[in-house]
Length: 237
Ligand SMILES: NC(=O)C1=CN([C@@H]2O[C@H](COP(=O)(O)OP(=O)(O)OC[C@H]3O[C@@H](n4cnc5c(N)ncnc54)[C@H](OP(=O)(O)O)[C@@H]3O)[C@@H](O)[C@H]2O)C=CC1
Ligand SMILES: Nc1nc2c(c(=O)[nH]1)N=C([C@H](O)[C@@H](O)CO)CN2
Image (cartoon, rainbow, N blue to C red; front, side):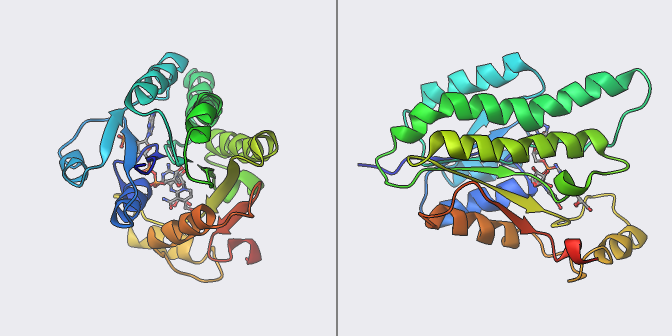
């Protein structure tokens, strides 16, 4: 029987793309969701990675994605909730709508995909099935400039505990809480030095450390309900 695919949401770029490519290299069938069509998706498709469009900013968009996911596959080996919008806090009239949007992307989408995805994971013929949430170090600390982002990531962290309890023993549910893994396009040298100083390791490791953490969770039959910090010792500063 052929292996069941691993779904990575928001897998068109950066951490999600890196993990999708590494999982494909390891021989897994992979499905990624993407929001914006672009040329870079061709290389993923050429490697046999299935790409499904999804915009999680609305409940209708989430449910539409779920329907197309179920039409594409009858089983999943794992679901990795990676899609995210690191939006700074909006001001004025936009603040409420922006919070609601981040709630849908970071909490409602994982919640509904996990509820509907249970039957797909339990249809997997392999003994281990996993759900992995990408949260963030700031889920524990809050953020002065990304309060809505941090709060909705904290909600996702809490969903890890609930789903781990609900889905054991047939499905393991864990989280990875990164901090400063990759820079953004507009980050200047001053920002780089400032954020590097925030962690004990003082480095910007790149997406490989996230894949190592994901690989650990996918390969370990006895871990559920935990969050793996991948933050360079930021809690020590
Ligand atoms: N990079 C870092 O240093 C850190 C990352 N993290 C977390 O790790 C994960 C990966 O980070 P990173 O690779 O930087 O993430 P990105 O900022 O690159 O976002 C990943 C993907 O999320 C998708 N996305 C954004 N909004 C929506 C939406 N409304 N509906 C559906 N998809 C959407 C985007 O799709 P598209 O491009 O197609 O629009 C994007 O490709 C995230 O959950 C992030 O919060 C946590 C701490 C640090
Ligand atoms: N969806 C995203 N979330 C986050 C990003 C990002 O680029 N996309 N980046 C960070 C920063 O690296 C932050 O950790 C620096 O302190 C956080 N989340």
